[in-house]
Length: 141
Image (cartoon, rainbow, N blue to C red; front, side, top):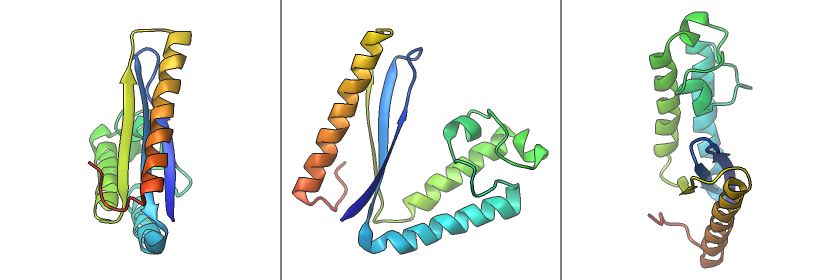
């Protein structure tokens, strides 16, 4: 069994519809979670980013919001970007963790954009279903 977390991104303005996932085999969940919790402890200790704060690119790479109780950290886009990159490094160090994305681009608005998001979401579901049916455990890229 594998645990899969899916998140969406993109906007109608950009025309990008994207769904990304992270996949962790059940048998390595505990050490992967431990590495992530160590990272979160470090964020609190060194940057004042609480454990309930979502590590999201909007707050960290784009510099929006105030993810920390440390105003000096919040004011530094470079520091926030480094924190986000460190999170990716923590995940990349876990050889069993798989990540992926599917995306589409459209110039359509409103209903046309929603249709593109639905099309991309359907691609995601078909791809994940295919991986599960094939018993995929090795990287697919």
